[in-house]
Amino acid sequence: KQEVTQIPAALSVPEGENLVLNCSFTDSAIYNLQWFRQDPGKGLTSLLLIQSSQREQTSGRLNASLDKSSGRSTLYIAASQPGDSATYLCAAGTGANSKLTFGKGITLSVRP
Amino acid sequence: KAGVTQTPRYLIKTRGQQVTLSCSPISGHRSVSWYQQTPGQGLQFLFEYFSETQRNKGNFPGRFSGRQFSNSRSEMNVSTLELGDSALYLCASSLWSNQPQHFGDGTRLSIL
Image 1 (cartoon, rainbow over the protein chains, first blue to last red):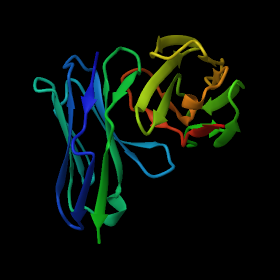
Image 2 (cartoon, one colour; image 1 turned 135 degrees about the vertical axis):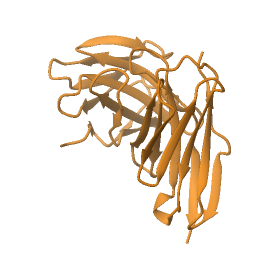
Image 3 (spheres, each protein chain N blue to C red; image 1 turned 90 degrees about the horizontal axis):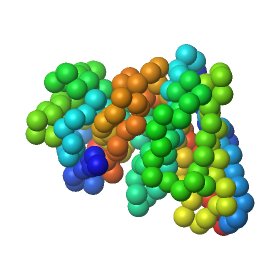
């Protein structure tokens, strides 16, 4: 059974810092790893998806990496801004269908 | 391009009642998945539909059911509501398996 862990549960940083959010998973037989952002009272916004054959994906100030052998993924946020404050969730896709197993998320606060 | 639309946004029900939630996926998307989000358990997979067929089901009791129509719109039904069913119910759609999933803003269900 796949388990996804995100530690710490909360993080507070000053504006402008580069930061790394970690995600670990127990079953390395994943199809993909997806990072999402959730704002209070809202649904999830897809940020990046890394296929199992890929090592990383980039979008603007975001870079996500995947190391299947160690069961880890990281989301790198460059030059953080107050607007980046949200909960960040990672999810592992472990089947040929679309089922995702989610971590509990990291609540990020970027202080002006 | 319209995103995933979920209706209604909010629902208040009492124990023992039943409820139906609706999800309209992004145009052209054939896969629709449902998730339950609670503060304690996080996001948990309910089921996934593809071309009107349920392809995968999570570990929820039979009171939770769903269906998908020929236009890919999906509904989920919860019968004999319990207090523990209070949650944010999220729907996600994707073109097909192993593609980015796009979420709606959810239906917040409160059971009194």
